[in-house]
Image (tube, rainbow, N blue to C red):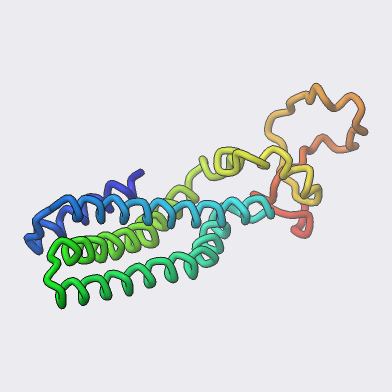
Length: 193
């Protein structure tokens, strides 16, 4: 949401800077560019969730998720910018200023939304990864986050507080009082304390 506020503020600043009058086609182009920015964030966050499900830490999931989502975001935005250039050129040749305004507004919106999706969202997520909130994997992986511990039994975290599991009656209890969760702190390959 914060990245979208930065996106909207930058878009309005560019409209004011270039003295573009907002017609109905300009409003349609701005709505379309916001939709493309939301699509970029969805791609990024889905890639991050995939990495979290595979047992990565929050910071590495952010970096790998952004790197995996970047080619799709780049391709979609570059093809939109090429389309905007073609629309702008044809409308200039035919004298259709409404289409020309749509193309210019869409190009500005796509450039600003690409900047906010990559730079602003990435910075905010990296700051979030440094807080204690990033250790709660279930907040970032709502579907499938519960069974991450079952899929990675070699990853350990020392238990600060023991909680009795009501479903553990049929399960064999480990000799040590440790719970297995996703690799957030250290893996079994690391030296145990």
